[in-house]
Amino acid sequence: MKYNNVKNFFFNNICIMDYIKNFNQSDSIIHYIPKNTDILLLGESTHGTEEFYKNRSDITKQLVSFDNFNIILFETDWFNLYNVNKYIHNKSENKSAKEALSNIHSFPIWLWKNNIIIDLIEWLKKFNEKSTKKVYLLGLDCYLLKESLDWLYAFLKIIDINLYNSIYSNLKFMNKCKTTTEFINIAIKNPQIDIFIQDYFQQILIQIQNNSQKYIKKCNELNIDTIAIISAEICCDVIINSYEYFKKQYLEPPGSNASWNTRDQHMLMTTMKLKDKISKSKIIIWAHNSHIGDATATEHGGTDFSNNNSWNLGQMCRAMFENTFIIGFGTYNGSVLAAPKWDDKHNIYVLNVPIKDSIEEHIYHFCKSRNINNCFIDLKKCKNISPFNTKKKQRMIGVIYNSNNELQSHYITSILSDHYDLYIFISHTSHLIEPSQKKSFTDSF
Image 1 (tube, rainbow, N blue to C red):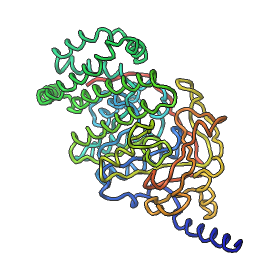
Image 2 (image 1 turned 30 degrees about the vertical axis):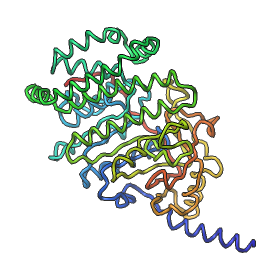
Image 3 (image 1 turned 45 degrees about the vertical axis):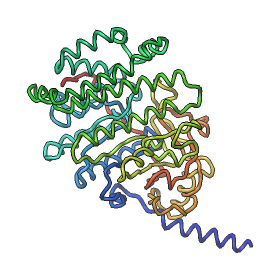
């Protein structure tokens, strides 16, 4: 019996070693991404790791250069990257990527104001200067309600003054608020506002869509990029979904997934809208593993809300788009840029090693057995291979790192082979490097 157990152990581990491939750089995995992919999701197990950003940037550059990907979406608000998109299309007064990022002031600032993002923005600008097929870089999140309203005002003031005057007059209760938080605090205490807000902006969205041809003509006359019309629609979506997201955060009981689901549904809606409105679109999405990994592979995932199930962008992309491919990223140890709490100053933290029997611990020891530091796993071939097809703890660190309470704060239970299509593991990682900041603001049409 003991002999058979030992024999089975070594047999299983020899089989597993066949699936642990050495990872050096993005070239290692490019040909594993199917050629017919038109939605590629690139994850990260932490929001502040240099190697995750570097490899996602390298993958993005290759796919833009050789596989006709033309839309890149980041896990940040549309408003934050609208000016950056203008910059890479040579439609901005900004002189550098750093200047184009200067309107991003909200926490967590290091996600986008770092050296790798700056390098990628400059690369995309040069690519667009040479290529006939232009690439767009935009955001798909929904935190910035008030900023989105202000952008919408600025656009309509130029394109449709009558609609602007009507909206501005009807939203006097919002205009006096300086921040999203200030508005939410007023709105949730006023049932009339609660009923009014979503219906009103749905009506505005319909008016913008009905006027799109007129707006295109006006934009062409004024030399305004017609992406601004899509932006006006997205701003309405952000206002509707941001309000719903924050309202649920305020009103739902602890442990509810309702606000999370609202946010990821907005991400899907933005993806779908761009897929529909930009011709021959192939999309790359950068977001945390918790957003891009298929939520049905996790302990609390599902397809409805009857049991407080959570759903996410990766799950919905797989359901909506046939040619979706998901790449997750993980690490064993190193340093990370994060904050101790929301809106607090970020710091460099040393990562704890993963907990016992976590998927990261298993993969780390597989790497050591092969005498390699980094690996990738083609999970489509591992549906029957343990531990990839069994429930294991997986680490998820966002913008906040609670190193003293990792198990409760930073682990989920998932089946890796259902969660992603391919998984990249980098044993030792380092924190993001920030550039020196130059404070300025330029945001014109």
